[in-house]
Amino acid sequence: MIRGGAVYIMTNARHTVLYVGVTSNLIARVQEHKDKVYPSSFTSKYNVFKLVYFEGFHSIEEAIDREKQVKKYRREKKDALVNQTNPEWKDLFDELE
Image 1 (cartoon, rainbow, N blue to C red):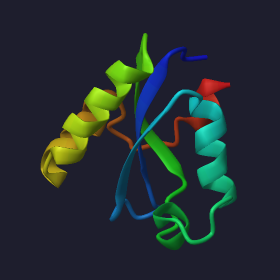
Image 2: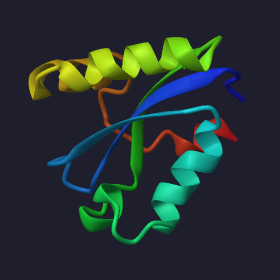
Image 3: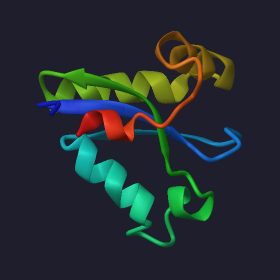
Image 4: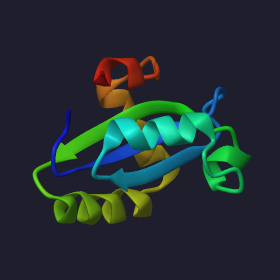
């Protein structure tokens, strides 16, 4: 379990949409996306359910700073970030538990 905070990137089945988020509980937050707990949210609307990237931090403040940085990246740079650690773009959720 990642303590402090985490930045994560999720996508849909065709990898056409990316969502960058931050949380203090990665497993619970990703499960909320997968379960569409918030039906009117961006991730529910665009069927974003696949965790393809995450980084853990010692504090939530560090994670928030990193999230702001990653959100400013162009699509190509976000893709490169995922490709560095997950070139197959597989769902990493099961590896968290």
